[in-house]
Image (cartoon, rainbow, N blue to C red; front, top):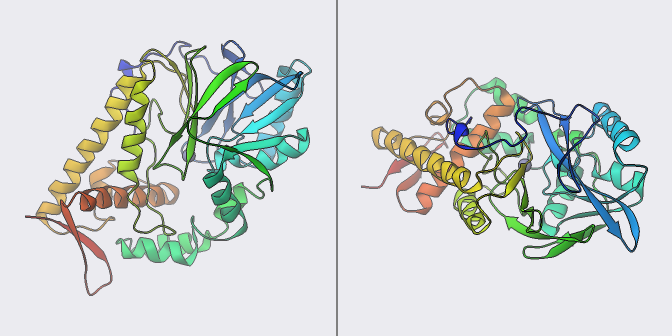
Amino acid sequence: MSNAGESALHYPLGSTLPEPGRTIEVAPGVRWLRMGLPFALDHINLWLLRDRIDGREGWSIVDCGIANEATRGHWEEVFENELQGLPVLRVICTHMHPDHIGLAHWLCEKWNCRLWISATDWNAARVASTTTTGFGGEAAAAFFAMHGLADPEALDKVRARSNYYASMVPQVPRAYRRLMDGQTVAFGGRAWRCIAGYGHAPEHIALFCADLNVLISGDMVLPRISTNVSVIDIEPEADPLPLYLASIAAMRTLPADCLVLPSHGKPFTGLHTRIGQLTEHHDERFADVLAACAQQPCHAADLLPVLFKRTLDLHQTTFAMGESVAHLHALAGQGRLRPQRAADGVLRFSTVA
Ligand SMILES: [Zn+2]
């Protein structure tokens, strides 16, 4: 959902964007590049960190883009034009979503280097790339149907999409190095601290460098859209919204004036303002959901027009359904809503008097 309070944030680079295959330095030794995505969300930001390992000079890559010809082509241009003749020394993935890890296998093979990622996300990516669970298929269709998605065409499309993750992440490196919360990684002699975050991905890792006052926020804090926080079929009783809100609240301990490098949108300052906006955004959505459920018991699909005031394509509908369930579960977790499964097998939620 786009951010009405965006003007309260500051974009130090204005409207400047890196050209495809090119980078822009956003802090000493930190370079920004963008890759296209075939979704409504049409780009992802990736980062190069000037690095040195065991006396060897080079670069570390943070996040990869999805596996397709165009992205590989842009990477080749970056290698040609932007690395100053130096190699890539490691590949960092903030989390396991396809736009972040899709080309990790290709990058690690090409440069004979290691993938660094949280253990939870490495495992989740390995599973998702080799099975048909999680992002489509029969189980996902049944989960959406239980939450009220009735359109047979939409359900058929979800069923047919069992290869969805693997189509964007055909492989995940078979070996990796584990990133954990609180761990410090030195990139080019500068210390960056890993900050684990929950609710968006299994164990998302953001990176903060106190020296540079720079936060690579990944998908946890975005300037323009709210982070997707969804319940999906492989963990159908999950309650990810409190996890997400606690994770971003914890980022208030970082300096208010740090430069935030998000995975989507532009580098910005105003971290605390944005955390406040996101918290408020979800509070408003909670109020909307409670008001709707006070009228009559609602399932997750009933709430789509309440939560999303725009037309959704299938890709957006599945994300929106996951988010709708997440709001319902959070309120049920607080004892404010009660789930009830009717004779039609659909789960509806009503307010607790
Ligand atoms: Zn993500």
